[in-house]
View 1 (cartoon, one colour):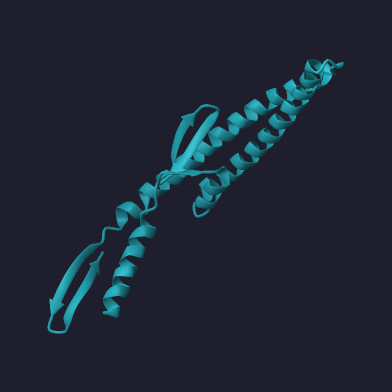
View 2 (spheres, rainbow, N blue to C red; view 1 turned 135 degrees about the horizontal axis):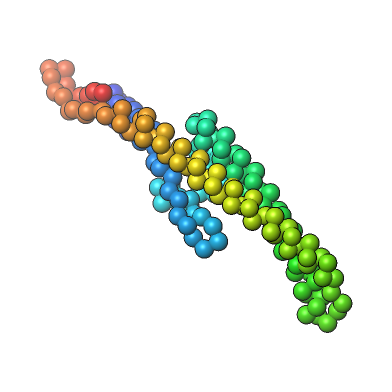
Length: 158
């Protein structure tokens, strides 16, 4: 009985590991949404998922770096625009030079963010294509329930 249970567990684990799921990309307002098995993925999740694929991993790490730079520049630009606006709305003397610098930072952040999105999509394409070419087509197990004079057993052939 223990052998049957262990065989079933081994078979299920093998199938689960060998049938990795594709990462899906969906354009949403303000960027892209990445999902796998219906679960939303962050940039960190993408990096961890793609570690086994050297090419995709290298590309997604570059995308992560660009994404971080764009986020910092965009956030700093937003603050530099927001401070003079707040001063102006509050009736104070606003420093519009800060707002101009902030706008410049946002303008610089836009192409960096676009580059990060392109690299992320390319890394996902590489990762998904590596899934198609390896495990899901080569591994086709055949399961059989067998019985003989020694008892009942479970057989997996591949």
